[in-house]
Length: 254
Image 1: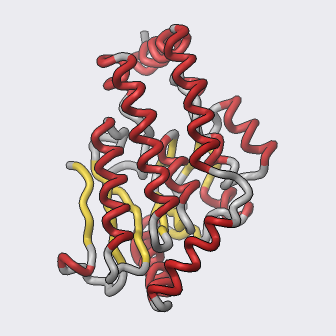
Image 2: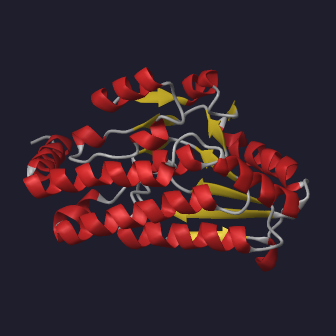
């Protein structure tokens, strides 16, 4: 359980490619330390001069289910502050990674998962992949910044307000998902794209990544931190706890 990296330094099977894999059973809802570990792994992979492309993947039922709500319910404001900072670090690590990052998405990609894929350079998804921000159902806010990078503005708003999800096929139609494949073919398809990227000159790829980030119309770091201020306000006001408690009761059938 945790975050692991397969890279050229430790015997990776793919030259020039580092695969960072997340595994936090049962649903990859990451605790605070898990987000920080993911950030550290992505940054380290990007700094490796032998790496020319980073793949972010996951084990288990789905790619990512966001933050560990039970941790926040248990530890209160300290966990909320920790989650805010840790998610910002993880999303920032993907965006600022010195080389291109490809996300391999299967199953559900929710909450913080949208922050990761929204900041990735490319997304390959399995046919069963779904993407969404159920934040309003769970007493939270955030990552609209990243959902807006995946779908048009009005669709982003409708998905956010309703907590609905979009399919991989729908995101492919919007141009944000590179390829949709059967689940059994996800790893091979992702590595094929990563291999094509990694075939380029490493120094030129790093310059290209920096150049593309430099012309982004939205500062994703600043935009996301702005959103997080409202997340914390919801926590201080008590409305977040009330919504989370109701969500927990509904899940338990109470």
